[in-house]
Image: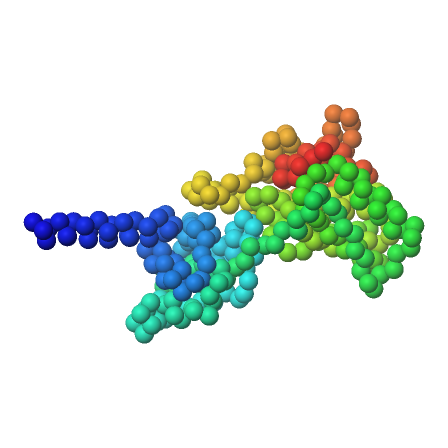
Length: 335
Ligand SMILES: [Zn+2]
């Protein structure tokens, strides 16, 4: 009887220990992946359940389940879309490699001891018997006490005092209407080779589908006038440039994934039949570009005051209610 009691106590202790291990594990991961995650955590590599689950989701929902390249590409895009950037090159290993490490190292963790303290996840593609390792980091947010658009000038371009004043004026049209807690830096570049203006968001994370927070944009201008600059600032903030407007929209794929992964909450913004919908935008007609993306708001879309968007093709001007509602639906706070 005494032995029996001891066994019961031991069993209880074991169950409690296992319970705490299970509590740390991410639910719904394939055995192969959760086993690796445990080994990595023991080696000090940081893992993140949401990321791990999203990567596993990518594999199980891939159109071609054996195709390493497209699965990896989508996995990385989804990772970026929830606010992470990949820190280093992707590394692909075969299952045989991992099995060899397990035998040799008593778990693969020792093979990755050098990754200590960094964040990593794995995509395991059973059909291909391949692992894709991804090191990533959280994108540093440009937190600031209030919303700001910081203007920087390309050091190889020259802008006169008057031009700088006009740029500031257009920036203020937008800045005065927005309320948030981050800073967007825009670099203004003079470019005589372009038609009028052009804006590129730099970095993937600005196109997050959870809360659009662009960090950096390049604005190229042939010449300066406040109306044109305003149009480009609208792009820099996300109108026609956020992920939701892009061909092969990663946000709609993420919205699908979020149904299976409760930790992921995407905004309600979406494109449907060429129109942008959000909780405030009730179907804003957009203009389709050659590549299938929606880069501009149609000139036919007017707000109740009769104003069109500052980001309509070829025109600019002050932001209208249409623009501000689009931004609010992308996650901005509006004054
Ligand atoms: Zn434009």
